Image (cartoon, rainbow, N blue to C red; front, side):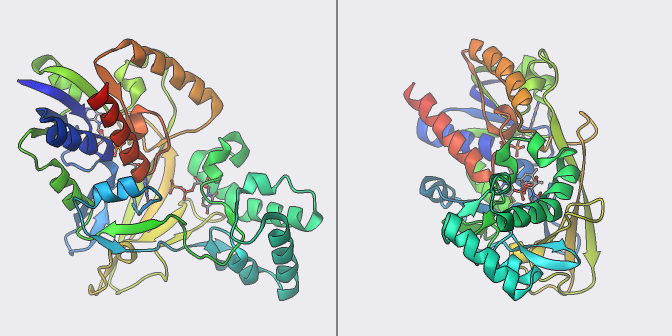
Length: 373
Ligand code: FAD
Ligand code: UDP
């Protein structure tokens, strides 16, 4: 077989590049994925009872990028959706990110008033303060609050999710869920928040439905590498695996999902409930909130159990953002720079904790470089 481009991985990164190369540059593209389906980790499917579930964990789309929003809007209509999350703290379900509303749910009105006043005076109404930043405050009330939130929301959850304490990871990790000096009860604050109306898989099907694109599923690139002739390769799998772990393996964190059917229309009030302090799982998501299937008489919950990554046994879901891993990644980047016809991109190819929109933005940028370089 002879193609212009091989793209390894049919997730957001691979699908975006394949679509752009095929439609804009009229390139012949072969997309290879070792899974039996397109969509990467964003893949969704109907279970036997007709509930739309996300096999690799709940995916909620949000972005501040008009460019990414406009691009994906060519392949899907949207259902507006603001994700809401609660965390169980001292037996109460309180809004997450931790906000002025969470203060009121947990503390006496007098204490909540005082903390609210101090937060607003110090940071301003509407600001987002990472927990590790809040812990640097000297005011005794703010210190009390920071320690309380750290202990009750971040410490246990992070230990479960990563097997590490928050300060052992890059501050950007816990910074994803800052303390909100506002009454905003949405999990994300991005300008665009919505779910693809017919699901992610349908969106991917439209992205990849181009006569220049051929799909080869259930096939590891290594199996067919020798049989395909191509000009250039885009690799969106793990960069350390590509180089045969030449500089040692990059650490990833994995998860196990347990899907639970319940014969009731609804099981929880909001999309996700987090359990920082109890249970071996971190959070429970009820898909119907995300997908809007509110006509069904039954529901499905996904429980997330973090676990160590073991190649071949489970999936490398999360790169682990911390300095020493970044150093090792840079060694691989140096190898990558030596290869003039291979590009690396995506959550695994770049070893970056990307959200879906960031994966698309990165792919669009790489496409521009390829098109103009
Ligand atoms: P992937 O989707 O991982 O695709 C890479 C593909 O490459 C895979 O299909 C894999 O099978 C294939 N592959 C790898 N190596 C090979 C090989 N050697 N040969 C053949 N194929 C190969 N983002 C959000 O914006 N919102 C969310 O709510 C959200 N929730 C998430 C929840 C979980 C549990 C996880 C793990 C991630 C979540 N994300 C979320 C992040 C999102 O999944 C990623 O940003 C996105 O999927 C990255 O796309 P990608 O194409 O780079 O990688
Ligand atoms: N986090 C936490 N408690 C929570 C929610 C998040 O400690 O209740 C921390 C934890 O370290 C987590 C990180 O913040 O891994 C990022 O959370 P996010 O919900 O963005 O994780 P993702 O959806 O990517 O798994």
